[in-house]
Every structure is written in structure tokens, then in C-alpha cells.
Image (tube, rainbow, N blue to C red):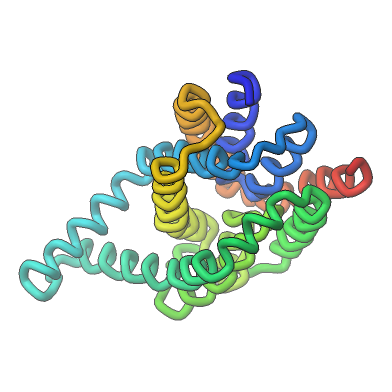
Length: 268
């Protein structure tokens, strides 16, 4: 992998991680087109995912600090008195509950996931499926201001399991699920962003361990550049998605997914 390859992959990863178009699917297709079939390429993929995690922490820092503060108060006093802290505590519990299904699936099916990440046609087919799901969100009836609760967090978490497959957008499936559960678009995105933190952090931690324990053929310079570039482009992707949601045009991403997926199926 050259530095140019690393930059291209990092830009694509950053822009597509939070947009509902499947970053994993785009990475598989991009690596196929660039002829990158190195045995440890998935480690680089996870590292650029870590870069987008950094951008997410910057954007969502208020919620992250609020959740951490509310949990600290519960540990310290056994309860939360302030209304705002109660809301953050409930949100934190919802994120934990919603993260369990994907975390468990990732551990159980890790080896199988690594295997299917080498199949670009499978990824292209799943991007089409993502497009169809996004298109159907036009039928959703979100209620302004409605937030994620315990039951809805569990359902969204179960839906997120599908995103372990390349081509199924994590943000697309979680935001769409939230919209179908009548969650308001902004709250749906907020929860989707927070829900991605444990998943990306856990995967990054695992691959960092593999990096240290077994070594890789990808250079450390490429990894550092990839993290920085994906963080910058990830920040832009988050801001773009929020603007689209505010305008109520979330389903517009479906056309892009359908076009890219169908092209991918026929050229591979």
C-alpha cells in the first residue's frame, strides 16, 4: 500500500462512515479497484475507522461528557437528582443496551466477517439493500422531539448487527430503524453516532492488539496518515449528514447506494 492509496482509502472511509452509504462496502470496492489484497488490509481499515472515531468524539463531546458525568454521580451517590443528568444517564444506559447485540455478534462471527470482507460483489449487493432500506424511510412517521428509550435502543441495537456485513451501512440501518420507531431525525442521528463509539473503539482495540502481537505488512506512516485524514473527512461527513437530516432529505442517499451498488455488481 502506498501513501496515496492510504489517503484515498482514508478520505472515502471518513466521508462514508457517518453518511448512510456503507463505509465498509466502499472500502471493499475501493481496495478491489486499487488492487489491494494484502493479508492485513483489514487492520488498516480498522485504523481509519479509529480516525473517524476521533472526529465523532470532537462533535459529540458534550453528550459524551454529560453521560460520563451522570454515571459518575450515580457511582458516587447512588442516584441522579438533576433533570439534565437523569436524561444523560438514560441516554448512556440506552447506548450500552444498544451496543450489546453488535458487540456479541462481532466476537462470535469475527473470523467469518474477516472472510466476507474480501468479497466485493457481496459488498455491492449489500449496498443495494442499504439503498432499498433508505428509500423505505419515506414511509416512516417520526415524531418531533421523540427520543430513544430502553426498548427502542434494544431494537436499534439488534438492527445494527446487520452492519457487520460489508455493504450494510451502520449509520443507515440504525438511523432508519430509529425513524421507523418514530424517533425524530436529529435524535436518531445523535443516538446512531453515540452507538458507534463502543463498536469502533472495540474493533480498534482488538486490531491494535493484533498489530502489536503479530505485526503487519502495512507501514506505520500509512497508518498515521490514514488516521489523520479519516478524522478530518469524518468531521465533514458528520456535518453533511446533519444538514441533510435537518432538511428531511435522508432518503435521497438511497439513489446513490442503488447506483453504486448496481455498478459494483456488474463491473466485478
